[in-house]
Length: 471
Image 1 (cartoon, rainbow, N blue to C red):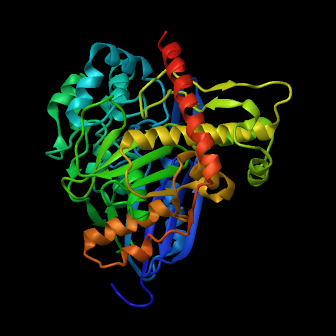
Image 2 (cartoon, rainbow, N blue to C red):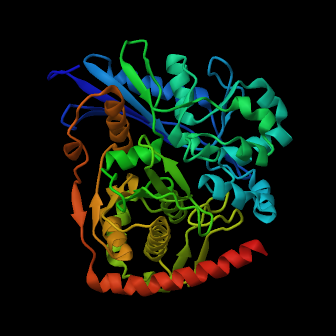
Image 3 (cartoon, rainbow, N blue to C red):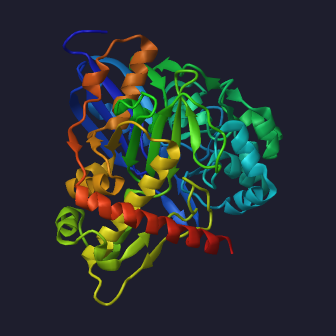
């Protein structure tokens, strides 16, 4: 479909917000609709109401309207377990990727060698909130839910089935943890290693290329990739060695690669893309802006004050240091430590809210540098996500990372979903225009030199914390 009235819509089903954005053929954002969705967090479990999530998708789509829509691209949060019946309706609440209930299983697989064996086979390092451990936990503790389900889906796949009736996932979501990255099909030996062969029928068919269907309005829709690779597309990160840092609820580092590297410490994952032989080496740390949100809530500081407070404190936060591992399920990249938790040091009665906030922002920057180095960054780096709304934090990232960063603002995941759909439907779009950065931030040389040394201290303190977490 062509013409001045053509619009392309991207849907991004996030962990806390569902968004839909309409773009013109040149990539200009025409309208954005969003709806918040809840998270139920209790004693290490994190769940979501599927009907609430699906209802939010219906609302944002309806708000944008269906006139002149050339096609729709769908993306959303990955991992977790979304158990549905034959119609795609929930048989229980969705278990989020943030969930920590399966940490003891992951601990046991780490000790027994199953964890490493799965990584060496698939390039995916399991963590408590990914489908392998969660399905195994449900099989042991809540088998009736699995018995009642027809499919264990990922978030966007649940939405796709409810919208179209099609039961499918794609290679990007299936990359964790059951997909053979070479054959791009499920690996039965991995399913068996996790004790889930009898539950294999629950795994959704892998559609390669991504599944397509029609909405009730008649518009075409494509299903995938999930949000991390969608953001890479939306930020123009496709050349080997180039990277993307998503400063969102989680802190995700992605580097494009044509090399499947299954050596080294088992961590992160290799996300299969729409191009065979091309992966995204992903190091998705558990907590990004969620850590900053926590310290702001704790100190009573508003988001609008962050830039001013960062400007009033010097690098080093007056001696306050933070290991920013706040997730109830520990950390998953660039290492897996289910019992690791955040640590503050150097705090005294003289410590100010500004010190705490800067220390958390610096700690997140160090975690990002660790992940990007582990992922093999050698080229350019783009930044996107909610954190880009703070210019001062973006300058701090450039300083901590010691390199220029391309800032890509707006609905990057939705934009990537549209670009993926365009490829699937054979529609030519100007990718360079669609992925152009809004700014490039250069590091301050003096600050970068300071942070290079502080980063080494961060790694030393982290090594000690990991030892304590295993005790």
